Image (cartoon, rainbow, N blue to C red):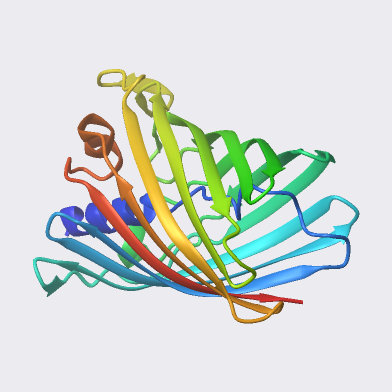
Length: 258
């Protein structure tokens, strides 16, 4: 059972600490809702999840958001691992302090189902800054962040994660916007148990996550986003998912502007 829970929690973790996007916040009084499906695959493991999220700019330059993920199933070699249910709910805040710069904070609440993540219950924090700029038909966005977790019920704290990412969106026409991006995630430090160091340092172990996608705007209100992401880095993956094979993520998300 421990291996089943470990695999499920690890796959869920690969989708954690994702800001809404790398671009400016919405205008004051504007909002966006999204519902999507995500299929995560690694080696013989497969996890299908649904997600609902929303964001709204409450005052000029200040955007708040909420993300609710739900895992439908976790399979290993075609067999159901009985690891499903609500994952960690995310709270998101972004503040645009310059026309091209945002500061952000994401908080992952310990709401993950016990069958899915065990009894750990840590709180996760992801914070940093974003820079974006429009270059004609190319909209460029970037991010630098740091993700940390508190120790949960098992008193174990994982290494910190430093992330750096960049994305280019290409405005081909009003309906179609293909995009490509690259995220780098580097581990910092060791696992600790009850405040004491445990094992070797993982500092410098790097995850490389290229992705590509397509936004299809049916009208100013509704957009369908299709995205494929791949995570490489054997040493990094051994720590974050307990296996060193590439992780593939395929997602389809419907966005509704209001």
